[in-house]
Amino acid sequence: MRAVDGRSGGGRASPAREAALRALRAIEGGLAPKTALGRALGDELGGPDRALATSLVYGVTRERARLDDRLARLVRRPLSGLDPATRAILRMAAYQLLSLDRVPRYAAVHEAVELAKRHAPRGRAAFVNAVLRALVRDEEGQAAGGAGERGATPGDREGADPAD
Image (cartoon, rainbow, N blue to C red; front, top):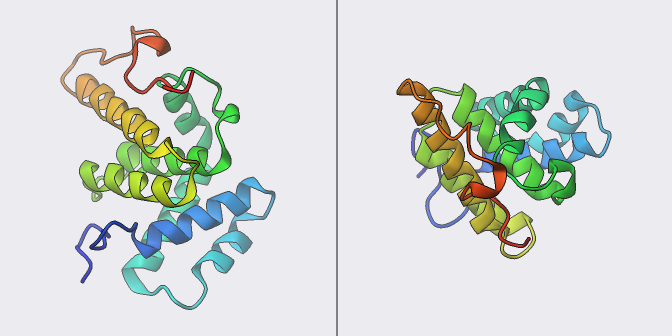
């Protein structure tokens, strides 16, 4: 049984987020968003999962520059230097954290970590977790009227890539 926030039980990411990741990777590979989404959704997703996947794909595509700017503040290397799966997972989770009020923060982070375990190179799940938790802290700091972590240098952040 799936929770209202789109999470599935057991250690796997929701079907909606799996489909959105497939579509985002295909878009980055040059496929048109509508075509990529249609192929990723197939006939297996219906109702709320289909709506969430569609929202994620079009939202990330539309807000990519803003998402990349926010993520670049938390990562020591250019996003272009990350593997495609990690980059797409971070963008998708950042979109949920920054733009979707109905997705709980813990769900967005947890689902991104589960996706990284399955689709990103070994060790990237911890990196994804650290970057997204830093983004959450930054957002909470800004919401509280503070500057969050904006004044810190990228190397000072917990989200900095441990592989460097």
